[in-house]
Amino acid sequence: MGVLLLMFGCAKQVSWDVQPRPSYQLPSLQVSVVAGEKECKRVADDLASTLSARPGVVVNPDAPVRLLVQDCEQEIDTVVELESTFPGIAYSSYVFQERRRYDMRGWANAVLLVDSPSAPTVRLAGGAERRVRGPWVSDGDLDIPRVFTLQQGVRRDLATDLADQLAPLPATIRRTLYRDPEPGTSRQLHNLAVAAEREGNLDEALRLAKEAYAANPTAGGMHLLVALQDHADAVGYALRP
Image (cartoon, rainbow, N blue to C red):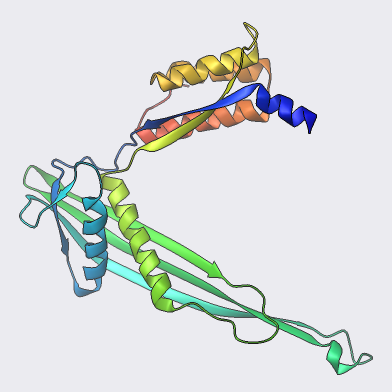
């Protein structure tokens, strides 16, 4: 316990927000959302509601940028698992045990066509999946949730996935900093790498993080290298090798 306290006492957490890159840069943040077929109406409604809550986005039926939701698919699978224990005929029948549990999986897919007067039509694919597994039950009902509840949740997740491709919310970056590291040490290089990352210089951050890991190859050092790559992927930044 004393070692853990010492480790946490020598480090602190810092955080800041970055703006992820959208899969497609909308020509305008004023958009209309239309269901291309009857099966997509609820997805389109959820998408319109989700986009309306995104900073700067205005959903307007008369907007020139048109988002058409089509090819919607959704399915819920429910499986009841059964597990039995029977030690053999030499034992009394009351030793026999049986238990059950439910496993529900819901998934949904859709295609989003972005139609704009000033740009070619763009096709985006969205998908979502949820899984709910109940506890083992020996007696009584399984108390399986309503299918509608899972359907609604998966549909909202699908709308969020499509909205994230057009107007992603800011993401929070969290990093560890070491307190008063010795000059030239791995910890100081680690701190310098985080400082460069906060300034947006991801190439310099990667170079310093590699030096820190080379000086002291730890799991924390490798975690920073992976996290830097994830940060670069999110904001569309190509790190130099």
